[in-house]
Image 1 (tube, rainbow over the protein chains, first blue to last red):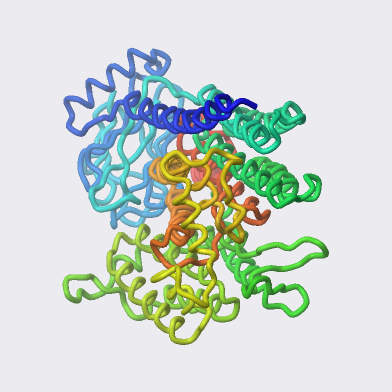
Image 2 (tube, chains in turn green, blue):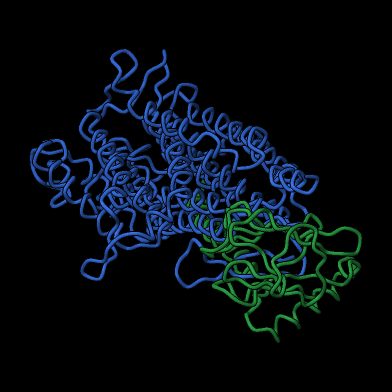
Length: 159
Length: 473
């Protein structure tokens, strides 16, 4: 086999190896810039939330409530979408919203939907779940702007 | 879709950012493209070896390529079916590394004059197929990585039993001064590779339960928050166990790997630097004791300081000379003489690649390892549950540490220890273990990237049932 072919293949392998490395880095780069990182602060969050809604009208059906935001406590600034299956809140790693709050129970509370209405259940927590200043039990209807306090964390229902 | 995470400057484990992308993308198409590139690269290398060493294209290029492609494609299809949101880069990287390892082992078989049907390459190929089948099977037996938590202490026990198995009189085999093998008929197996995974699962599960006690209580000393004496128990047990491996099996590499991974996971779980200080201190004490006690270990240190010391093994020196002769671009596959080094296809496969692909090729390989580890740590960041985070961190860190110990040993950064180069080196047990690691990482990453409303009903069904009970009460 000619010297030229061998040399071409030798450098071809190195080139292809690096091409492979760069395509992987390229995919990673795409992941980085393809994602929008939601920064804290209510103003921008609200804008992002409304844009999300515009993108997905299906979600807007349920009473137009779509997000749960943490507005006080060590996790302030986080929002999470209200999913069909409901949200489990607590310190247990299995929860949807895992709180780093010493005053929260392992499985503290649950938010779920029935028809067009969202409800809150306190799951027998030690320090209680409060809506406003009222300690609540089970099947408590919650609407937009409802403030839910769990330990030192305050959550708000948002559109 | 949005992935939920929580950004907390205090540490990695609780570090979460709310990331929003426009649409949830499974990225399986990207994976397929990368896989085609990966298989193409391996086949090009295979053809090149035959071209240089036999002067013609290999006759079995097509069946080989088809076989390799089918195995990889099968994995890809299983991912589409069982874990559509899994990380798209893990499988292609593992494929390239495994394939290049096969090519190099095959090339060394030819150099050694081994019959192709009898050589190490065929064994490695069979192990690769078996390993991929095991990795695929894992997707069927393990629909959720959190199920592993149910067997926390079973895994710990099994891990320790596997680790100590080579010491059994009949099963254990002493090969080249290391008692780390068990023999089953014609097969020998290195159980510490499987024990590694079991123990990482155990560490992750144990640390998720106990990290609060380990990180919150304790006094400060010299600016470092020190843990309580009784919380030191686990780290001391891990230290003693790895010392036992070192003393009875004279396996420095495995011992270093276990202890390193444990300390690393302890640090990630508790976010307290004092564990690293304590761990490094214990490690140095262990090293110094081993240096005083074992001639085996002393000779490694002597060779590390001067690989040309007369009267010692010239393996390290030969590896270094090989890499030096490769230079920047290497001699080209099949054109060098990596077979001059002992264990050129296992312990010193990195030196073989350094010789034939040069610094340029070796850097690409090291970068592939770095990317593999990065994907593992990225999975840990994105995982929603603490156990998944710790497990992914531990697995990724074990890969990183293993690469550092092996490549560092061969390139004389640290004293040489016997650990296998993940995916590249000849050796079935290591290959099997590494594919299982990739499989677990894929499983965790699938759950981490999967949008919340698409979470399969099997996940968290325990929670839902519990809530239903509360509601009906």
